[in-house]
Image 1 (cartoon, rainbow, N blue to C red):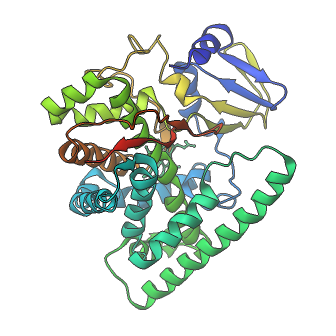
Image 2 (tube, rainbow, N blue to C red; image 1 turned 135 degrees about the vertical axis):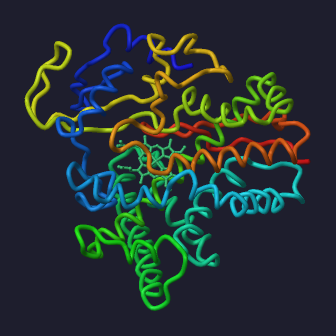
Length: 376
Ligand code: HEM
């Protein structure tokens, strides 16, 4: 897939894009070097989460303190405790479509699932989750706005949705201060950084980040994983014969159709980088999707292979280095459960004839907007 990246890796692996005012980096090894040096290549502030109030926008040494704290709450072991609850949500979402002849894998399943799961983990009441989903899609979903007018309108809608999300979180935090439960917000309220409770802004910022970071990304992973089964029916057959291959299907989907195409960094000092002069303050786009298809790293990179091994070169779909995706164990688990349940409940993964899938139109995000399957 994506011959354009192959061409760029070969012809201009590192290039300055005058129009966008950014460096683009396309080869696995260069991207690896950049992501492994967070002091030379800082993360950028984000309008949604404020300056440096969340792990993804923090740099060393502060990043580590917050990251260590959150890591403990997101280990594969902690996540496995959620398996039954996630399975119930998946089955319920599929059941909700039982009176229809078709199920839209994106709208009916892949979109609500990650939000419902993270709302459950945070401890936000079930009756709020539909509102939460709408708000978070408005605030954090990919926008396709093109004109200046669209953008201006988008900023207003974005600010409004973000404001409402903050209110829901503030209410939940207030409630859990009075009445702590066994949920993530209660644990974060209690957690200490440098012997002190974390500032309110960081508490809200990191909760917002958790609400935002896992949604569209996990949605994309699921829709792309189903897409592969439609494009290559032999993969479906292999998974049906041996369900222990499902985790491999998820990993290879992450590599092959990277849900996050690119992440951003900023150069912190003038330097030479592989023959290019990077200036302090220059923005850099590291194209994870291209790194994942780099044939210098992966044999037959253009082929989807269930038996691919990632021991030597981990794929970059979750990033690399200190900001490696905190939610990776959760995203993996959710996707694995989805494929297990789908293959159990559907005797065949079959697209509705004469429909087409639509890809998400975004610079950053890669997945499908709709994918309609025959319901059973
Ligand atoms: C960071 C991808 C799911 C929470 C990242 C980064 C990537 C990524 C590429 C690195 C960002 C950077 O270095 O600038 C994905 C993909 C997902 C996924 C492809 C699904 C398939 C999730 C989920 C959660 C989550 C489910 C949380 C519940 C985070 C957080 C960070 C992060 C908190 C920041 C970590 C840090 O800066 O230390 N993710 N993510 N992600 N992700 Fe994910």
